[in-house]
Image (tube, rainbow, N blue to C red; front, side, top):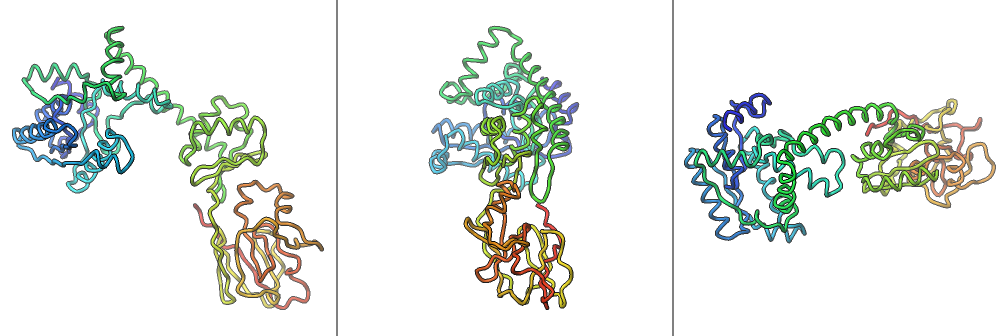
Length: 444
């Protein structure tokens, strides 16, 4: 066992023999056997033990055992006592989850304070199988079949190739003692049920079941890596980024296999769930242009030719432009405010505006447009609702929500980025103009 362990950590470059690590140790078989393997391998490490105060004298006995083992090895040991049940009650989470949060918060603090290279934990091959089976029961995606990584975010698992039975054999041959956690015998928890009821059945059906399952999971993991590589290529080709929004052409989905997975791994970073995509795909099938799907911070708008992703509209804080202002931020755009005496030719783009300055009443105001709001679009003699103008433009709903207006008194003088009001345009009689010249767009 020792030779196989050393060969494994050297071949996979899992541990650095010149670095110092922190070992999470409970006093049970797995972590105690790992402590002996690390010590005999020459790895430099200290121990960290959590007393969760959940099993009375048993918990205190575990702490005493770990302290004695650290003394035997001549190692430093960190010990912390937790009021786990109170913490779980205050957080509204299970005792198991409370213990997990508490220990990893503390381990993270120790890693930073003591400058350890990483946290070593004693998860082994049996734990790996249990984890994947648990993930399957939770309705996992492809990543849930990966299981635990040997080295991720400073958490190191050097025992993943080794079974619990091999650890028991190593401990028996070397005369190593450990502590038994009585709570591990109960089947009240899902993991324990899988450990005591499901895994033995698999082993009884085929002695090599765990090894075969692990082989299958490794193949799935490699397939998953290929999928994500190809997904990234697909997204780079079909998802366009523009001024804080992302656009996916509907045509890119029509004949694509695995539409739901393609969408999910595009939208997952923005808080969308796999279940939400059933509604998205149903809306696509029914061609429900204008439909919007939301998470806490993002909105997905089904438009005629695109799915458009952007930040959810937040309450816009009204701002003012004083007569002395020389620049203004409107959304993500920065404008220079230029006074032109005499005025120049009006800009061709609706992204900019040139207004008759003598007709403006300062301070000007920038606010969100409101239903029922009216103005006289440039070139028209009659007033028109802003909402009707936006409909005529076939502007996607997600963009409509972000439209702002520039006001002079009660008048809307510019639906920003859309059109100015005809009453405030430059005419031959205009003596002075205020030019909103777009300088740049702030990237998200």
